[in-house]
Amino acid sequence: MKQIIKRILGLPSRKSVISVVACLFLTLAVLSVNSALTTLFHYREIEGYDFDSIISNPSYDWVGPQAGERVQLGYLTDNNLQPLTQKQPQKLLVLLVFDRECGACRLAGDQSSYLRESLEKQGVGFGIISFSQRTTHARLSRYVDSFDSDASTYVWTKGASTIPLSIRKMVVPSYILVNRDGWVIKTFPGTDKNSAVREKMINQIIKEATMENLKPPMAGD
Image (cartoon, rainbow, N blue to C red; front, side, top):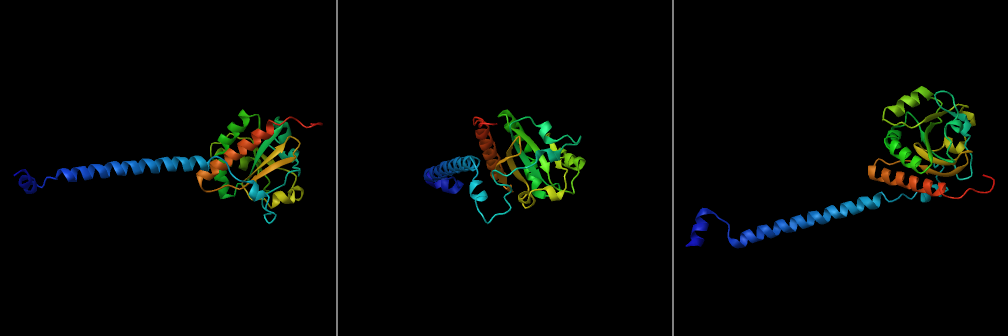
């Protein structure tokens, strides 16, 4: 009689209810596993970035200056025409090379405050620089201010003929790790449209700059 009433009223059987509940639990379990895998994937994504395989490729002439080249930091000046060498006292600097007309530069610029704060906590200086002859101090400063970055900005003031060839060919945006005399330690070329990859790149820059800063000074430094 109960089965007949259930059929008349359209009520589900006990087996049907158990099946539905089992399906719900299985769905929740799958979602939990997917969430965990997504989190793990993201964590691995931001662990680090392999710049070495890029800068060591001899066919890439756009990766910027190699270790041992020198950038004349005194030719980079701020709004008051003060050279970078007088404004940045740290023994190591990470310089973000910018071009105001480069769309990808805004992607890198959005992370500049985080990068600057992280580096300065480790005693490493940070600045945004431009070698573009179309950029003035005021224009670069306004552009950087537009994405709420409080990083110091510097423009190359000695003309295009004095810019090293490796920098003229370099992709922008790129990052250059130098000592206070302008000797290049490492270049970190490019950026990525994927925010997780950009975070991974920034973390690698912070890691390598921090490790370099912890090294004891060489004789004569």
